[in-house]
Amino acid sequence: MQPSAVRPPLERIEELAGRAAVPAVRTAIAVLMLWFGVPKLFPGGSPAESLVVRTLGTLSGGLVAGDVARVGVAVFEIGLGVALLVDRCMPVVLSALLVHMAGTAAPLLLFPDETWRSAGIGTLEGQYILKNVVIVAGVVVLAGSMRRGPRDPRGERATR
Image 1: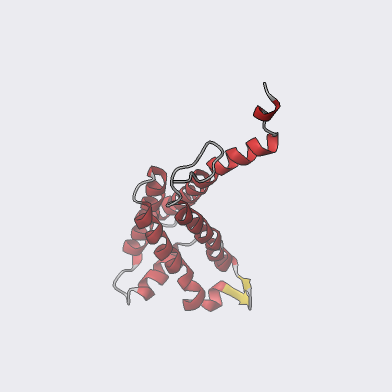
Image 2: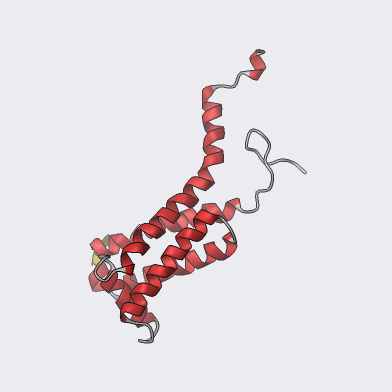
């Protein structure tokens, strides 16, 4: 082998990480959506059930409540998780995911006594909601990766 053909290990790791990053973020968010969605299918299955039902009831003006709210959110979260795994219609999926994240953040404003212990200190419920900041960041990464176009073997954008 010629010396120029040998690439340093860090460069190979960086290339592999570059290729794996977007699928890893997409899969991680999908797993979270399924992990949090499936328990909501069953009464008492999710520790967030009460908060979900009350939030959706409040946001819908009482039109969506009880088991309909719980199961509706469960199906929506499961659908988002499956759609992320299938990797189709990403603009629609990512938009729906951002709308969902906005809805999940609503209790921070609607029920501050339950979600904040004091200024900047979330209760367990508040922390459960605040972890969604990471999901939103992942959505930004996924959205930013959609229009990158073809890449050369090093993972860099190919020039056209």
